[in-house]
Length: 224
Picture (tube, helix red, strand yellow):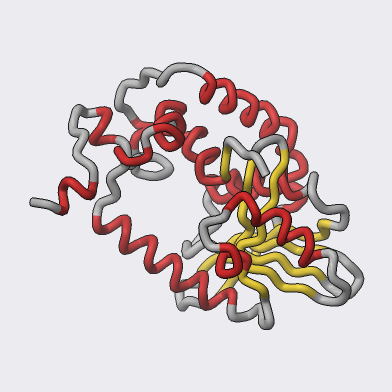
């Protein structure tokens, strides 16, 4: 399936349109410092622990690897099966936006719950935006979406849940406008943007070195 945006690129675009453009057309310029990579690792560890609470799941990413464009088709096939279904990294596409859901659970009656996992002690605004873009896509792909929750860390690596379905529904008109704006950005030239507060919030931008005139990639840096 054809897609131009992903969840992570959408979140990047909300932070900085130039960063979105670079993420799509010049991703080799990204630089992630060691502390960021370590945070990613810890996040994956917590995610793996939470996923273990949903047994007998099909991991779509393990089935298809880097064939991302095939995730939505396999996801639809698996969700069409009778009985309960648990999926990891289920793929959905709507309006050229692709999202991969951490966990999708379909019960015996066909009701579907989606879970986004974050290794954080609170539900931050950026996480809510993460859920909003996922809901925007997934709600157009399935009929019986009954729940959409954030699962976060209680401080002892145990899960806490916050239901965000109603908030995501209210945000849909805004998300739709933001999607169209980002698609416009990707059709033009590289946007100009001066370094500022957007370079560090809500995340440190991996293209800050590029914008500051330091264009060495991680591969180049590793050679020294």
